Length: 237
Image (cartoon, rainbow, N blue to C red; front, side, top):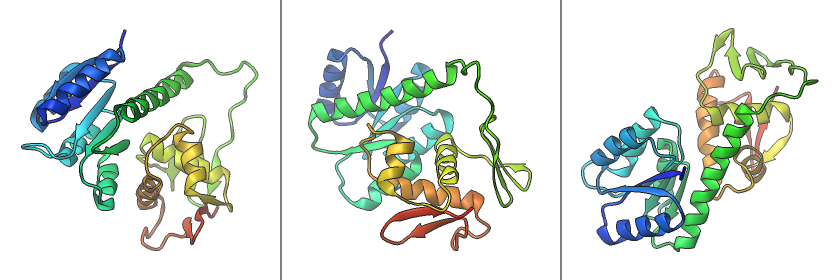
């Protein structure tokens, strides 16, 4: 069954071009022109990936992305004509997985879409793959009042479960397994997001900030997940 892509783009010519290109790539495509229709279409279609324009009539792409992320955990690739860094960071904070700046080459867009879908497929395959017969459960990783239960993919702080998003959990586990080491943004992207990730390294900063809000007594003065100037981040166990 072909993977389903929802296109949300108010510019008619671009919307039709995107739909034509992606259908030729073998995807099942649905295209809408505004934010409210996007929310309805996403609920009805349950797409595998959403291409979301930033500048939309009615609800803008930021708000649509935020509402979609509250409902579903699928790749959202944001299309934007604005090159400012703040727009890209806000898009990531709202839950976008990647973005591409207009005008763009269709080949690059298709490559990014396929990379995102491939990442999702790998994650699903890992979840359904049976564990090796001789595998033994890993011991929890302990750090002060934090306990990372690898067998249950659960993090406790003072005995209370933390509501971590999947990528926040993966990021924390990676840091905890390399405690005391300075890790660059590029290393973190490669190991947590994957070699095929094509987004901005600022997504690491965004997720670190989210993680600090959940594991630090004072996120503005982090003691556990500290910044290494000129290098990246270090987890202090």
